[in-house]
Image (cartoon, rainbow, N blue to C red; front, side, top):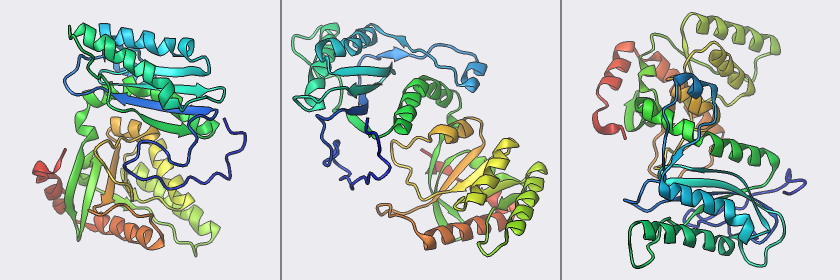
Length: 335
């Protein structure tokens, strides 16, 4: 783990590459490894039945491993036995993929991928034997890695691994709250959306927007006005760029009000809301709206954020009858 990563600048990585070209994969460090099984394989695990209170509290849930999953669990635990320079911090075996956080505690003579080849080969041999094959059939697609540069990233990765089963159970229980929608025409703009689309039917949608010329007193007054609006049932909508705007949305969340956030992110095939956004989705309290763009996402600047604030205002000004119509006729735009 680097002692000081505050000045580290992440170089741009080609999208198609599974490995960071700039990184030395023989070096000491932490990695979050994800590997998905090929299609039509034996499930690695199943999710146990749990009560909803356990899901709400964030309690860690242990999947029920299949025979193949149990064999893979043993192989993960055996990695340090065959590779003494590696330590497994956390792992989870999901029905169709695995996650584990691995620590390279001493410099490797080979790259990390070469060290892990034996593990993935052993998993494929177990899979092929259970299927009764007379040859070795590959179980996993090539794995993905996230390099964890500091303790914050490490803690986030560990929490993600631990929380994976709970997240899957929630998504299966409330699939309508994790839907993706493409090409939604709202006012004069085309949006992609993710989450509870029915928040567009709120009686009162309140645009949250700070003006930098305001004095500190004016900002405090505006914050208090927003709080009163939330207490009376308003749903905030904002890209939440300014620190005070973020604080105001936090006030709404503390009051258990849903929120609509405009964002510059792309909802790709494997997009998943993370952290607090996931829990808000699970509670039906979040709708993410992104101006739809067929081109690759570019880094947003002042103009893009200004435009999103204008979009938030325009959406809030739409008559509720039109917002009802938009939601009612989404048709095949959901995925």
